[in-house]
Length: 279
Ligand code: NI
Image 1 (spheres, protein in one colour):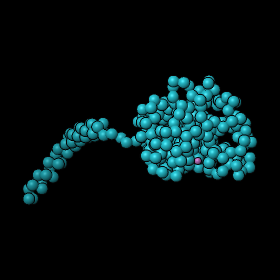
Image 2 (image 1 turned 180 degrees about the vertical axis):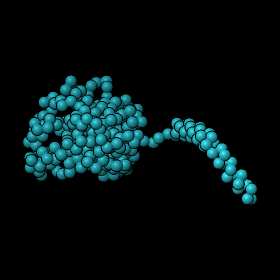
Image 3 (image 1 turned 90 degrees about the horizontal axis):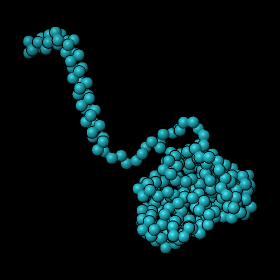
Image 4 (image 1 turned 90 degrees about the vertical axis):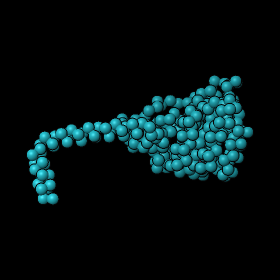
C-alpha cells in the first residue's frame, strides 16, 4: 500500500508537466466530441415554440409601418363586411380581447400551421402585460387593431375618456411591436355615431364591426362555435371570435379547415377595406 502510494505520487511528480498538457489536449478532444454529440442530439430534437419573441426590446425604437390614412370613405359608416370580389370568396377572421398568455400563442400556432392571417383587436392593458405575444402576432404577419385600453362601454364615456382609451392602447401597441393599429373595434360593439367621427378624425381608425357572430363568449362548446361560423360564413364576411376563451381556440382547427375546404381565402381587415374600396 505504501509503495503504491509513493509510485503514484512520484509518477505524478515526474510526468507532471507533460502529463498536464497532454491531458489538457485529451480533455479538449473529449470536450469537442461531446459538443459534436450534443449538437447532433439537438439537431434531432424539435423545438415547440419560437422563444425569440420573448426578447424584451427591439433596437431603434420607432414605427415599423408607415403612417398611412385609410380611404376617408370609411369615416362615416361602420364596416361590418365587404361585398367581396366575385369568384374569390374570402373572409376576415378577427379575434378580440387578447392577448391571453396561453390561448393566443396556441391560436398563433394553429394559424401558422395553415399559413392563415387574422386580425387581433387587442385590449391595451393586456398588451402591456404580454408585449411579447403582440410582437409575435405582428412578426407572424397578422394585423393588430385597437380595442381600447380597459374594455369599457364607450357610449358611457366622454370624448376625452374615449380619446385616452384609444391613445393608451395605440401607445402600448407601438411600444410592444413598433406598429400602429389601423382600425378599431368598440367593446360590445357600442359606439355613438358622433364618437365614430371623433375617433376617425383624431386617429384615422375606421370602426370595424362584424357580420358573423358565433357568440363564442357564451361558451357553447367548440363544435357549436365551428358550426355557427361555417353556416354563417359568406363572401366578404368579418367573423368575430375571442382568443381569450380556450374553447374558442379549440374550435379553430376545424373552423379554419372547414372554411378552407369551402374555398375561402383569409384576409386581414386592412386587406378587406382595400378590396371594399375597389368594388
Ligand atoms: Ni371585446
